[in-house]
Image 1 (cartoon, rainbow, N blue to C red):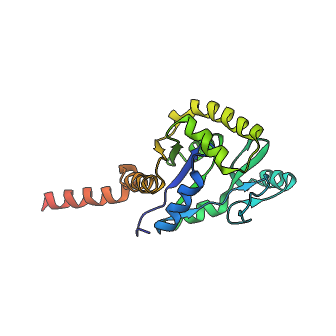
Image 2: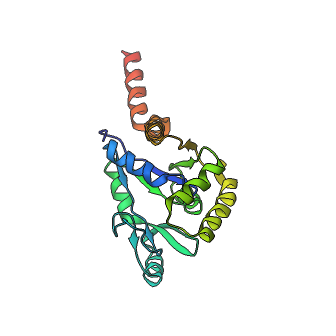
Image 3: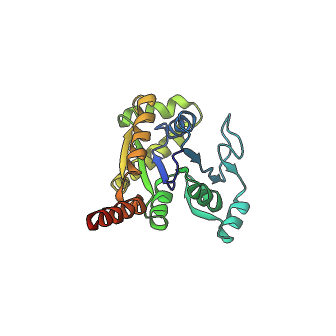
Length: 211
């Protein structure tokens, strides 16, 4: 993690089956700059998923209680399940200088942008629609009906991609991880994220010009 800089809230979205989870795992394992915000959901765990690591798996009643207590940055309903982002962890990590990754769908991403205007929104794309279908089938975790539901949802989500700052095409995962990291590092160089440094240089230049 770089010293003396505030973290960026990085929102990673994409169609189901684009490899968002693999991308996020790669960023976390290859670089020290990131913290993952674990989302809360009412959906059932998939094979290999751990509570508190993959998601916080809760009941619908518990999720709605958390909403009532204002304990979420955002939440949305997707394929008949709730997904949301716990608030306290996100803000603690940003202050500590970590880039906090939120892997959430498009509804939640746009809510994040309204609450945190400086958030960086990345949309993960497949090389093509046919490849997306092949990946969903290849996972072997959903029925044909659910796959059809996810493809229909992708068609709707495709209309909102322009709301994001960058797209990242996941054709080869290693290249996708590196490209995503490069985009996030470049975002740290934006002038609005370096106002204190800019002001210090300006003041020093003025002082030197007056000597």
